[in-house]
Length: 74
Image (cartoon, rainbow, N blue to C red; front, side):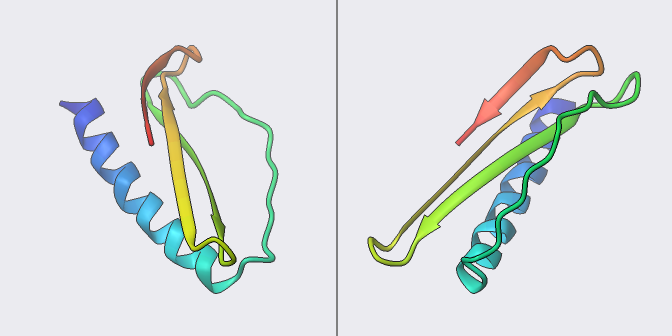
């Protein structure tokens, strides 16, 4: 149930990220992954878009506090 709710939240976040990336295509960010606190689940996602070919894509992964992959989406 928790993973299902997390996937729903991740989909909403992905949709916002895709919309924002269309507004500012020059923005690029990088980060180092850190495990969440014990008992928590972390959602990491990334996306890409291009205006010249008119497409976008996003995906992500859920990890537990031990770094184990729980689910992925795209």
